[in-house]
Image (cartoon, rainbow, N blue to C red):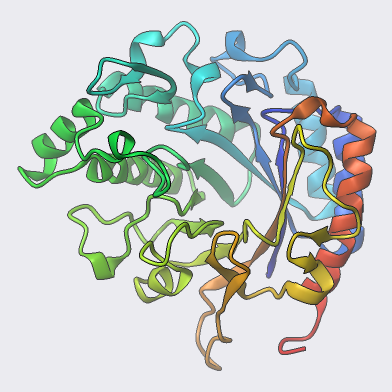
Amino acid sequence: MTYIGLSLDVGRKSFGVDAICDLIRRMAELGFTALHLHLTETHRVGVVLPGFEELAAPDAWTPADTARLVATAQAAGIALIPEIDLPSHAAALLVGREHLQLTDRRGRVHADRLDIARPEARRLALDLLEASAYLFPGEWIHLGGDEFLAAPWEDEDAQHPERFPSLVAHAREVVGPGGTALDSYALFMNELAARARELGRTPILWNDHVVPACENPLVPITTDAVLDVWIRWRDWTPSVTDYLESGYRVLNSNGDLLYVVLTEDGLPAADGVGRNGTLRETFRPRRFMGLAAQRTWLDVPPAPPGTVDPVLGASLSLWCDSPGAATERETLSLLETWMEPFAEVMRRPAGS
């Protein structure tokens, strides 16, 4: 099955269950195969999670709502993929557990980051993973994992190798004196991925902090996990080619071509028109980001005949950075105008 996906940010913005059931049926008509639900964000938990009911937003999906979504998706042949986004974007998940927030070397508490050096924090993450798996049965589960450590454009203090002392200490305790915060992160993601596999799921995670084999990380992130490749910040940061050569399977969530974002600056253009042109003109299923915002692409060649293709498919994403920028109806109507050209491109014969 080719992965023809839609990622929906229901962590930031509330969507009614009726509207999402209609969306699922429309996705099936267009040939989509998967709906990835980004369920949690810094300020909101968009679903009532068993065992964590107190964290849910007042308008979060109830267990009855979730059951309707699951039944609708199963009838439509759409895979539902839940995501509890950790260890960053986590402030709403840490209400009442503020002692698990991460502290930097300056003593500043980062309310949206989980201190994954703490056994209690790792247990919490596993429990949240299991809760989402219980609500949304299926083959896949998304582990999150984005924007936890510094991006290349952040300042020197953010880039300091010992910015988060607890992470460095944890890594050195487990892997030795050369351990870094990246190793602590990798240990955490590997623990989540292993639990996902025990639950019978294929784990997916964002590619931000995955160090490819060519860089010889002390703690490689397991190749059992599928990398959701959305970003490449600089030419010296890993590309999709590095990940493929390291043995990973990948999804294409090209953050320049496939992101529909609600912002305070206004709504995106309709009909799949972004800053790089239209989807029909510029997007190809195997066209990954070359460099962020540089209009450069990496086109992955087809897998040789008789081999397993490590490129599983691609996903369109709706992000609601400013959830009040549009109503539910306006948002989904806009999204429809991107879904149609995306699905059309994904259905084209290879090489066309």
